[in-house]
Length: 531
Image (cartoon, rainbow, N blue to C red; front, side, top):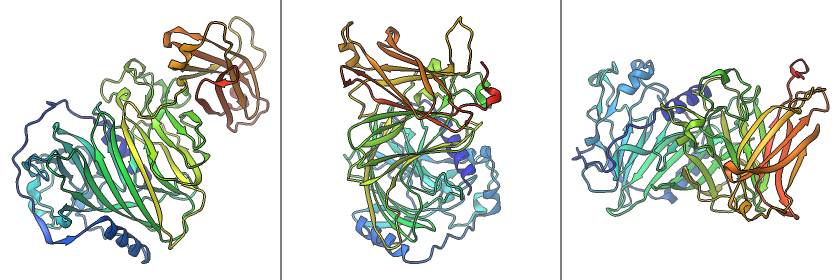
């Protein structure tokens, strides 16, 4: 499967949203599931051993024996297949979790093996057509192979058995929700060579083990085996539903070969346009903004907080932010005002943010951001991840631990003022004839610490640019947000159309008052620099 297919499927499923159902759904009487073979002993140490052994052998992709009628399904046919709730794993067992399984079809034609883990023993779940209502899918279940398998699974929590809280589907993609019950951006197990000149490699989760939780447990543990031409890996997920869901992720990676760009804890999102970047063709849409995330937040190892608004570039754009033992990073949807989107179908203001919190020292490396041009909101075009400084090589073991926080409110926020909006437009002084081309930047900062400033305190906007001339800079109170607004113009100093790096933060009496705003602006071609 190509990146285009993955991204379209990912965004389309995210846009589907959830039906509004009763918060506390009645438990469904369970139907017995079918299993294959005998139970086998399992633990995480065994899984890591399997991944290590797998990496010593040549990569062997799974044989695709999926019937043609499944491969040829369209979106409506795939959506017509519904899982029967009485066949959910642990249905009727009075546990806090249930699991339901995705049928193969559409873009998801690589079967995964799914096991139930109970008392240290794992047994594979068998595909059974009785699990599904095939509706108008066009499939005839009696004609499908008995060993067909599954595409992935989704998880329900006891407070609402209609809406899923997390889903693992396609390659190593997975997603989750917080209290807004809205899917949005995705996480992945691993990214390989993302944003490079050659084709990206998409590792697959090939096996899952779902551990039966204790009756009173509010956490679900899932294990996964990852495999690809370059690497194999063992994963452990501990999923804890909450207003901001937390996933504890432990990863053991075993490269088969030297990996040029390995992306750890990758996040994948969509940004088409917003108030800071409306230059693309789709910006004539009736909606003011279209995006799942509006910025990349970074909490560096030295304690510095950075905010990088996303853009939809004309060509693929790659940025690397060097760091050592980062404290966290994430793709966030800070703008949560419905009026700024006006989309009452997919509700972009409800899309969850995701924060990556390392739980172990990651050493030296870089948080890398890839922005891909798009004219369609059904394509995820934003990727960020951690890339270790030393390239992974065959025979090594790489261990990573981190937490993923999913929701509208992140547990880690800067203690200083945050950027709440970025706007850009033509520069110059209103009412005066412009003698040359310039571009204006308007950054709004808000935070409780700004309320401590007296009227006589002089706040300084510290502005820097990699090239060009900064002019007409100012900072003034903005009562509407109980914050401050920084404005400045940038006059290009040459005819180049390569990006210019900008950096802004607030300071008073030598004390930093805000996180640092980072931006990359690409000057237009000379013919488009209209005065």
